[in-house]
Every structure is written in structure tokens, then in C-alpha cells.
Length: 337
Image (cartoon, rainbow, N blue to C red; front, top):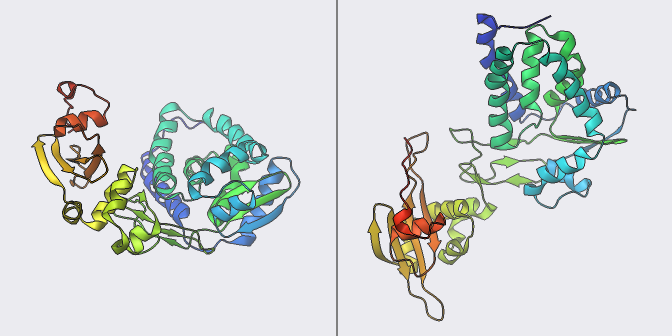
């Protein structure tokens, strides 16, 4: 079968398929272990490998720790992928995907390929993986599932095991004799833009205790969310990450921060406001308060407090310095609209 153009009905079904796979990728339901294990055996058989021993883990973190890959979530993805690429994951997953890719790509027109990937794959990927670290195969499998529903049954048949696994469990790390499989997260909280967010607890949590705390998509230490009253102005000043510092300020209160520091507003211009704190036995603390000129999708604007060298004399000079512009007269950004 050759699929050179989508019918109006097929076009209408694309958002429906994307929504279905987004729900799969974000599901908080317990894993369906019998279905997942059968799917894994099917995957290995498709790759020409013997059925593995299957080890269930409470979360991707414990899954990674079992493999001696990681100690913190931030490195789970990178370490897992590095290990996976060196393992039979290439045989179990990538060789299957590549063969199907070639078969499907040869059976669809360029406009159909782009339409399905843009409307289904990219949408699911952004909602499931980029935003919340959800089921890691949902994005690309969603597109192939759309092709399957539109008639490319034979071409996509080798993906049956992978599709069944994605629908029934969390992450999977296949190796030659063992396949580690993670339970799904049991709690997931997002803001109205689909970003991880919870004001009073974990935004993402697993049964083994592993959790991620986040504020409108910014990952932060747990206590910034759960006990914001323990935040100090000194900690905020010392925080090197601008996004985390912004969240800390939001939880702490910018007015309170300035008051506790005893900061003096020494200059202001169209680029922001410059504050200075004289300190005993230390160089002055100078920070520039700026508002992002590019509004958020909801129309709001983010405020940032950026620490700059003590010799800064104006907000424009300070902001220029953050962009590595030596001469403030050369700093003239264009506002995005």
C-alpha cells in the first residue's frame, strides 16, 4: 500500500491519536505486568534474541541504580542512553525501528510523513518527554501507530511488542539476558501549560519514593516547595542557577528579599534596576532586577534577579555584562513580538 495523501477523515484523526498517546505516556495507572512481560518477549523474539530475565523496578532511578548507572535523576537519561546504546537495545529497539522506518518511509509521501510527525509525534513528544519525562517511546511510536491505522499494517507489524510495552509500563532498559522495566509514576501534577508543577509536594512521584519537585517546569529541591519558610536571603543570593533562584525569590518574596538584604536601589533605566548592598569584610553585592521582554504564552512576564560584578554602574551595563557585551552602548536588544 502507498499512502501519498491523507484523507480529510485521516487528517481529523491525527489530534485524536496524539491525545490518546499523550494519555498513554502520562498514565499514572499501575503497570500491567503480564502484558508488559509478554511484550518484552515479543520484542526480543523480533530481534532474534532469547527471552530475557525481566526485573521490575519502582522507578527509572532505581532502575538506573540497579544498573550502576546513576546517582541522581539528572543523569538517569544521559547515562541510561549511553549504556543502552552500547547494549542490545540497539538490536531490540533500534534495529526494529530502523527497519520499520525504512519500510514506512518508502510507503508514504513526503507531505503525509511531515503531517503525521508534526501533528502526532512532535506533539506527544513535547507533552510526554520534554515536559514530564514520561514514557520515553510514546512520541515516535504514536506516529507509527497512526500510519498503522491508516493502512500500513504490514510495514508497522514489527513494532507490535514495543507498542504493547509502551501501553503497559514505564521505562525499559533491555540488555542481552536481562530487561529492566520501571513501574509508572503514580502521581503527576502539571500547570496549565503542561509543565511539571506542584505547589505543596512532588510534581512527579514513584512508588519507591523517588520524586521530582518542580515549579512551573523548573526542577527545584524539595524544601523549596514543601517548606519555603526555610529559604533564606543568603541562599537565594548564593544560588548559581538563575531559574532556580527566580523560583526561590517567588516563594520567598522579592520585597522581603530586598528588605532583608538591606539593598539600595542605586540606578534604574529601561533595562532594569540596579541594587547594591555594602558588606563588611566582603565586596559589595550588586544585582540587577530585570523583566523578560518576551511575554509568556499566558501574557505574564518573568522577573529575574541577576548577580553582576560590583563595578557595574547601570542596569544597562549590568544586563549587557550578562550577555558578555563589554560596551553597554553596543547592547540594544530587539524586543520579540
